[in-house]
Image 1: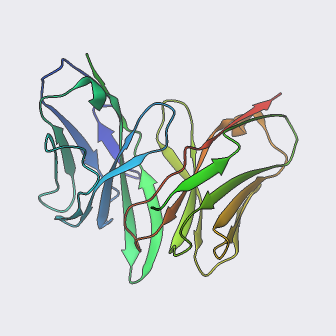
Image 2: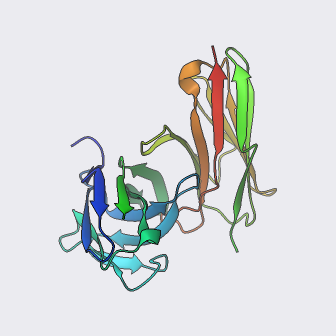
Image 3: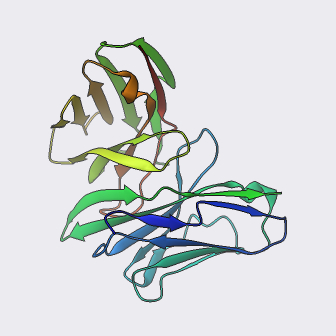
Length: 116
Length: 112
């Protein structure tokens, strides 16, 4: 596709349920990022992949959060035993890095997670 | 700690005005800086990317400048239109293609 796609667009979970959020990056983009955006705030970094390697997971708020990108393309963000504080929009972005130049990040529409 | 501040937090202007949105960042060792637009309930749309070696970038009615040494960037919007109403976010890249650090954004409302 032409842009980054995410699914589902909306997810409602009961507290304690596990959820899985999917991201399809722009074809050919090596880098993939996950961000969390609370209402009225800017996005906050969660984790970053280059191809299938997870290079930075410093932003994951707890060990209930897990991300993978096994074939270096599609990525899944999994949240186990969801809590109300996990309610947020989860944004995925991809980018093309050539040598020392980054050409910027391109974002998907996000998945709005509501935990009841 | 690397922090990004955007001023003002909200701005309401009549249609046709020229306006400036400000972004400041605490650490000047950036590789590039990106400006985004976010419409309610949507993802982020990239507007402009300025590499650290550049002073400004232009796209249509938008012009972004970068003063790396003072830790500031501005987004200039000429002849504003109601369709420009959105939240504008700036994000410096400190990691050469790694994570972006975002400010809280400026919520712009352009009244017809």
